[in-house]
Image 1 (cartoon, rainbow, N blue to C red):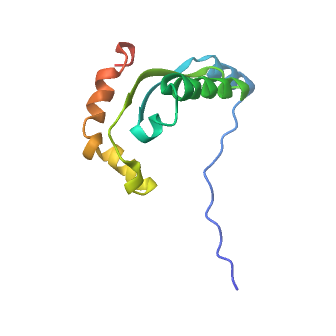
Image 2: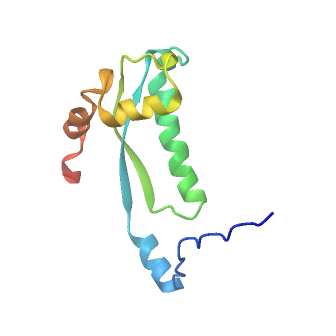
Length: 120
């Protein structure tokens, strides 16, 4: 059996220590909008605290622990969306969200509405 040659992977560029210091001195804030279903909401006493705020906090702690403390998530909006995730497969959820189908038809407009003024 002949093994076909592997395609070369992406070219990696090493950064100097000075360039890495410069990049980590730049503060990066990623605005996050969290949408959740009624099924998910039922699993928590207080979804705002027990899931959403905790997830943002844990992600920010993870960034700091990984040496990328200059990156932070900022919650700008959270909302329940009427969607039954039990009737579809994982990628269908993703495609419906991206394509704005069904209950997700207003998500793109909601994102623009909730986007902080500084990000526009």
